[in-house]
Length: 308
Image (cartoon, rainbow, N blue to C red; front, side, top):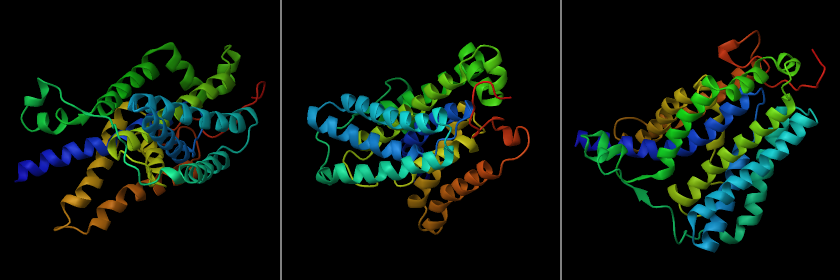
């Protein structure tokens, strides 16, 4: 019985952590370039709606995923326009997009509420690895392809950020945009594209919810996951590999809130991710001094070419 509990907990934790990981990875890249995006929740919910509508209309969940990515990227482009090009307050712009996304999705998706997705994403088994004791049935049997693609994406982003010229450029823009500008880097261009990339990743996270995890559409179905993803990026110290552990930890907390109701108050375990979210936002708002907690030095600061 205890072994079954471990297997079930690991399997459900991986599934629940998938949208958190995708959204957090996007936010890590965005913040590495020096931009704060508090609009993740709005981008996720619009991605979830766009993905569901397209998948329900065409019968192809992967086309729905592309639509979710496009919706997230387009919404992020608005954030890039206001916060990067117009140098508006990044926190205000992100919050406005979250409110906008929640409101627009509720309005457009009203006629789709309660409809189950006719052709959701299917589970995927890994033939050899699923025979590994405990870990095999938990992690390699009956999981979604996006769960494993998320893990691969984390590894790929870690390599890009730390071992490629592109990654060095992104980190330099986030640490010292003036120095990057002097070296010939187009700071604003880098920031714009990283913000859009973060939106695409948030769109994947939202699409996973409506196409796989909860194959249906419901208003507010992201239920604060975008804020938790924001906290994950900071909790992982802006490192994609640490984000895997952080996402699984949050997923485990959520799963245990159901599995251990007989031993602990479920509210205690359920509220833990939100407490981390509050702490993470406080760190962002009050961060002072060079490299506090390993944060990018220019995080949240707008940049104009020629300024020092």
